[in-house]
Each structure stands twice: as C-alpha cells, then as structure tokens.
Image (tube, rainbow, N blue to C red):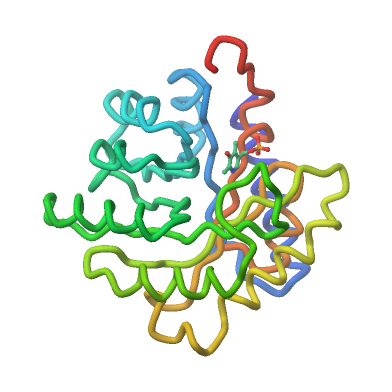
Length: 232
Ligand SMILES: *Cc1c(COP(=O)(O)O)cnc(C)c1O
C-alpha cells in the first residue's frame, strides 16, 4: 500500500511539473513519517524513499538509530532550543527556523560539532495563530538577513505550512507569494544559491509544485491517517 501511494504521489508531482513546465527531478518528495512505526518507514524506504520528515526530536533520533544511514532526515516540526543538540549534524535540513534565537543555538551546536547546518526559515504564510513563524514580512526579511550572517548556519530557503483546507486552490496565493518573496533582490547574498521552497502537504502539494515547491511534505497521502491517540 505504501509503495503504491508513493507511486501515485510521484505521478501527481510529475503531472504538476509537466503542467507548469518544470523538471520532475527538481522536486523532492519528503515522506512525513511522524507517529508511524519503523516497519512502515522501511516499506517506504524499500519503495525508494530516501527523504523522511519528522516533527519530534526524540522520535527522529530513535528512528535514525535503526534505519539505513543513507536516509536524509528533515526536521519539519517546531524545534525547541534545548533539543537542538540532539539533532545537530544529523539532519539533512531543518525546515522550521522561526526565531533568531533558535538559529543562534543551531549555530552554537554546529560550531561544537564542526559542521554546517542547513536550514529553512519558516514563514507563517496566512498569519494563522496556530502556526509558528510570523506573517510580518519586514520581520521575516530581518530574520533571513540575520540568520544568513551566521557562519555555521546555511539558509537554503523558506518553508511554509498553508492553511488546512478542502480546496487546495485557495492556498495557491500563499505558495505564489512565498516564491515571490524568496526572490527579492535584497536576499541576493542571503541564500545559499537559488532559494529552495518547502511547501505543500497531502491536501495541496500539486498546487505547491505548480507554484515552485522544491520540497513537498506528504504524510497522510503516503502512510494513511495518523492516530494521535497513543502518541500525544
Ligand atoms: C504532519 C506534517 C506534514 C504532513 O501532513 P499531511 O497532511 O499528513 O501530508 C507536512 N508538514 C508538516 C510541517 C507537518 O507537521
């Protein structure tokens, strides 16, 4: 079932790429495996997935220990500063940098580990209270500039979590706005190359791809509904 789901999602990504004149290989599908047991991740791995997304540090570390070393781990959830030390040097990309303070802690741990940490700045596209990051774009501009000045933190791009909706088209404007914002000339020296965009989840990833997503984060569409009963 998981292999089939991955094939379906990849097919839809390819269609969205074709529609928008993009190369399908430019989009990375992240299998969001939070709350899911290791055997399900192994199934996704066997189906070719090498990018996994988790939102809790402890759970990510536990899974890292038992799964193949060539997996690229993406921290997509809110990251507490006191937990940074457990994942520093072990994640491929931290998607959820939403304060300068957090970035400073990531910098400090990267120095300790002698590594460079790749991160995305999280933007609260629709200004929802339930989401992290801010929708104040002047503040986001300042944050991007500040974080990019840290020597051991590399800002690869931006991430956003669009509103939950039954109508993915209603999120198109947020994805388009994020892309436009990322390309502001004043960020010319801030990003490490062309800014990468992490946007789109199960409900809206095809629209996100059409609007330029480099990473889509798909959980339910690959692993099925999550049961939070025992986990939270
Ligand atoms: C859980 C989660 C996802 C995946 O959500 P689905 O709707 O199940 O695809 C994507 N991004 C973030 C940040 C998440 O926390």
